[in-house]
Length: 215
Image (cartoon, rainbow, N blue to C red; front, side, top):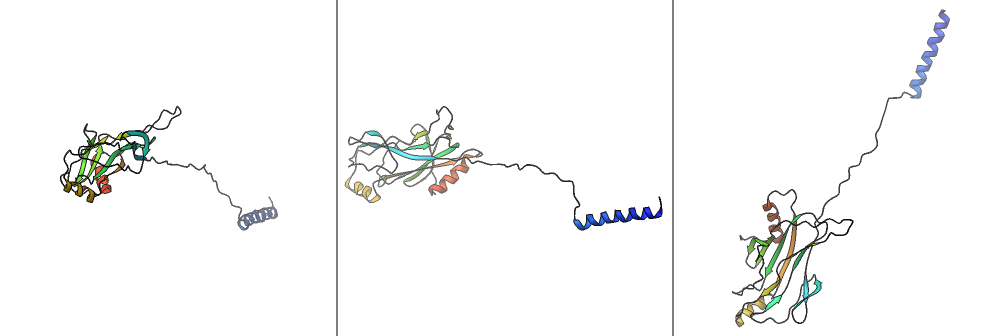
């Protein structure tokens, strides 16, 4: 090859290199993937507290009440039908179920019998005067919804009646009036999955109920 041809080839090669640099057309080997999205759904606990209303004769009806029932005049020895019930709604995660019962009728030696836990269904967690926190005997998990629609809520009765003592003095009746003449009930639920020690749930329930004294 002659010297002139070599020079031409060198000049052409240099020109191509300069074009690549100036034009910025250098390329790299690349690859990419599709996006993989991890979506998380969360379980939930859904509970309700209700009781059936009573008719004029004091019998339970089929109508549910979520606000509380006003009863007529009570006399010593009365047995009043009352069925506060905690419902764990369909699809709820497994949970510990608690009820806080504030019995302002239990004053001045007046003892009302609500028969809570008479079959060991409810266990006392803490008690502070006329306020008592109970836990249901087992964890509760409502069935998940399925195609054949056989799933249902889980209903847990707290008690079914209130019995008043057969002897009440006028002073005791005045004490009852001053205390408010009422029984207040609240329900609370805490997840049970991944809770190896029930006292963890109890501690949270006690904080919720604001019960400080020992049982």
